[in-house]
Length: 291
Image (cartoon, rainbow, N blue to C red; front, side, top):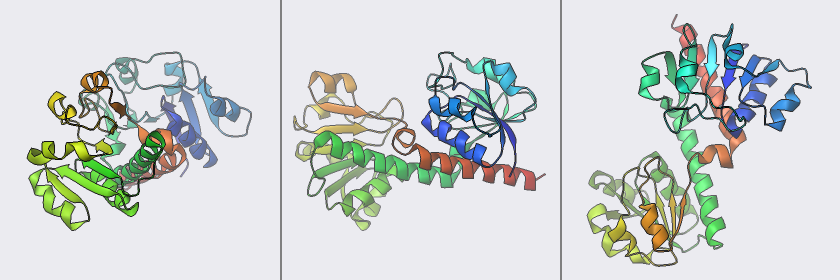
């Protein structure tokens, strides 16, 4: 599939994505990467990649626009990592008339203004991202505790896509895996090898865990629950804002706490880029077939 497209902002995943798309001989304009050596080196090759200094130049004559994942972190600016420039969301959207925006976690106010497809609504990509997130989380757990997971007492909070995969992978390490979730998930947890704990029974068992991993973006570990934890516990929160831990209280109690977002882009950027490329190709093919 040959395309002409513009890529605006992003992280290391996006850098790898640009290189993969360039290998497929796509014609690409990029903005927001003047501080990235890998992209700068592409100018010295025979790839069809043009580094643009201005956003209007990057968008001119292009109908397919790839934005970052996530599209924004503060709902004001587009996510960028390799530029000193800031790009306001409205500055981008006002130039997208007649164009298609593909990005991840696009806010509703952007979806209302322009033609856009949120790639993180694609179920295959969501599952693949969850796998990367889980592998990265396990990497963090081992690195930060400097201990084997074998026979460690680990609590996973939440049994959504990521929670399910976490319980499965941690069981493979022969850890003692517990999972706290809503009542309707309890039987599933027990069926697939975890030890279930209802939310209302959580307080009674909190002091026995070596590692607690939260996947729920709602406050679960509040002041009262944090006081019940063992002082040497490691807390890892991988939920989107506002997270599930009272971080200020955890800091006051000197509990080691890590809030890690965007794990796929940090731990496995090349794999993530491959998944995103396949998703983009599939989305555009479906769109073409439906014309």
